[in-house]
Image 1 (spheres, rainbow, N blue to C red):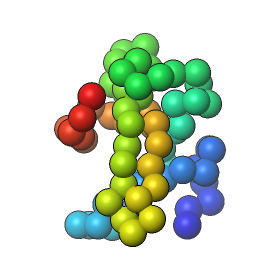
Image 2 (tube, rainbow, N blue to C red):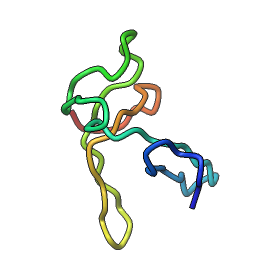
Image 3 (cartoon, rainbow, N blue to C red):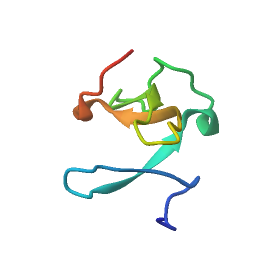
Amino acid sequence: MPKNCPDGYWITFNDDGTCLCMLSCAVIGKTVGQACTTDGAYVCKAIKATNASANGGNFCVTNKWSLCGP
């Protein structure tokens, strides 16, 4: 578990083990579909994990990840 993520959330990609901190949309008052940054590079998306506990939430993620969903 990483200790340097500002609000304690992170994502680990199974294919290469890359671990990235994620910002909860609620922390900055954003809802799904709203831009998290002024340049629109990060957008609030509803994330659903595929792990056994199926955790998830609304997080600011980069459009570069080409995540499915709204």
